[in-house]
Length: 185
Image 1 (tube, one colour):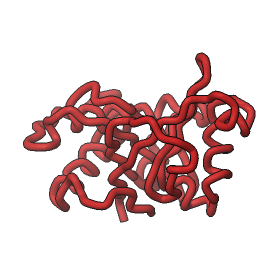
Image 2: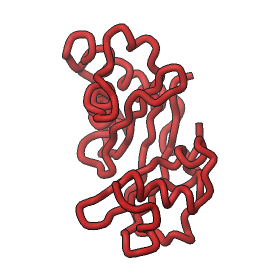
Image 3: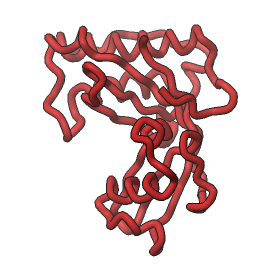
């Protein structure tokens, strides 16, 4: 798993707390359609942007997130965990039987910022590509996990947006971000 920020925003206890919140949200919602009440403190109660990625036996099973701090980090992680399990259009909803096999990974995002293609650093930056109403996002760890160079990362972010791979060379808007990435062992 790629560590995409230079300094950690969250300490080890806060990371563990967020992973527990995500795990309980998936278990509670998939099994009983209920979200457990959480009492976040400190940074977990502050506004935050995050993605939750679910994998099963090392393969993607769902990934949903917010690029803007729309609620507390705790609430964002809860909502994204449930959405990754039940609403990712690439996959059928997670079944109760699958829940124990899932691994949770959380990416806590910095705010988006304009970035030039030549400034994108694989393993450090995530990308959002926008052109018209088309938009696609790839987390920083995706390029590392796939073994991509910068150009391939830019091409793939465009493809994720439903654009031609070279759209980043022809007027698509690029925004970058970094992420603190951590997951269950």
